[in-house]
Image (tube, rainbow, N blue to C red; front, side, top):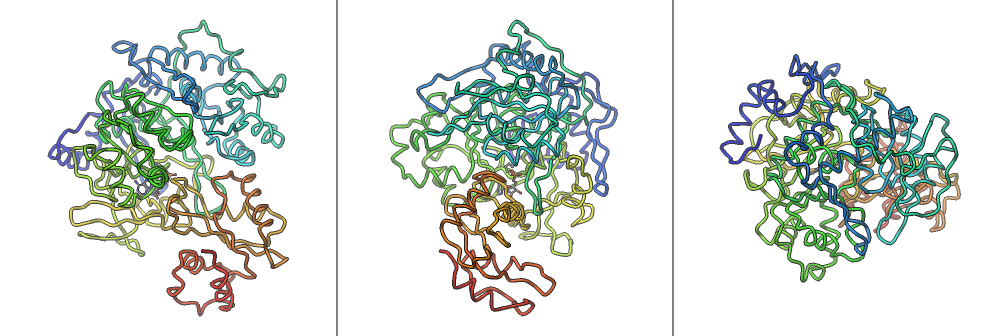
Length: 629
Ligand code: WT7
């Protein structure tokens, strides 16, 4: 499965494009299937319809767990590093994790959860989160993990959209010096929901927790600790594995759907190849399992590959900005996979937090989530990797399930701020505004993909039309990523950022419309428009232009608006800047010209372009004057 030289990459890539079915069948046959597929691939991007390994039957947890029991039951599957460095680390061998997942699966099944049911998981970064997801997969329930930083209202939206009847949560989550009372946020959410049958509660922080009899179930009471095995449900390749909600350019988050077979094959294949994973290496992905990075490269990819995956509960800057480096040294981490925003944030503390840290165990570094600026790339390379670790810049999306464009560590060349080359089986193209493919190198355009790879999004949950319109409609016959990109003379891709109304704030994807809807919930707000602006650490910051009836906004109202955003979405969507305005630049048909607002927010006030189509060009002058630096 592993590519180990540039020539082999080129050969493999060529083969994967000429004979995708043969190529992926070969990879897939290295997994455990209960029944082999009849057809490797069936697709069209018009409906869209994509089916990989149709007729095949499997359970992904048998590949993550059972498969390793024969030859490496005592290898560490999961290392858990707690938020508080004074608390003890936990370790699970493959055998132990298997048993934990079986017990959890039995608990869920005993309380009525069955194949096809949707289960929302709202937990901190603790081993039980991975166990909960795997337990769902084991019994064929569809998990939908909700990031622990989201609000009660976000839980309501996701539970309703997924029609979930079960929630798995914990009493609280530790994040740095703070404890977040997850269970009470779930309780708030459930005030407005009557479809939840049971809430499973894992006790983690030990803080006082209200339990509603009949509905709420303590994990430690419900699990039968004497159970060691639980049979894995037989799943078809295209049965749903999980739903993960992600922001788009309009309205509410959409549920990206991933299915069992292709997702398993692709995440494992890319994990092994991109990071050049070798047995017994310790892999530390710093993402939260609430995002796709954690799904694919903390849980499924590494475990299917038999790797040792390290999970960290806390944050990079607590108790101090040396925490990541302490973890690397303590656990002899070999591969570190993190986000540019984390690197930039740690960079801002200078080199002192790195003093006295060895970091000698590191072999490979990775980044994900947003473009990495050269300064951050070199800092990571020089001070963390000490000039001896290749950096892989991995470009992908919630919808792609796994890494699509990246160099392979030490095998293909890195180029700072370039994700570089496509994975085998991935055919990127750049298109111009009209949808014509831009041929030759160098080139620039909107990034699309020509043909399906095994872990491509199958649908948006309960709304296939939305999936079609969002990804397959702008450029017929192509999957549109929403990103812009450049291609250099050698065919390396550089992702320049979103070309739609989606922001990337600290590597988190946030739709401007979603933030606007949240701001508008505040009674003092008439209308708002949200755009991004360059932010030194977050990559992009959130800039909100807000109209309120009193005309004169003030700091008190700013605070109240932030509090409203916290309630509707969560603190990650809080605007960095709120400018009160009396009007927004609108066309005669009433459409807000965001282009102008974006330029103002970015400080490029002299390049506003054509403003003659505006209903009232004067508002632009007012907005320019009131711009917040
Ligand atoms: C968007 C997807 C993929 C897991 C984390 C984010 C941006 C992602 C890179 C990269 C430049 C990147 C894109 C993409 N992005 N990785 N290496 N270089 N941009 O998943 O929340 O679905 O966001 O993140 O804009 O479309 P996501």
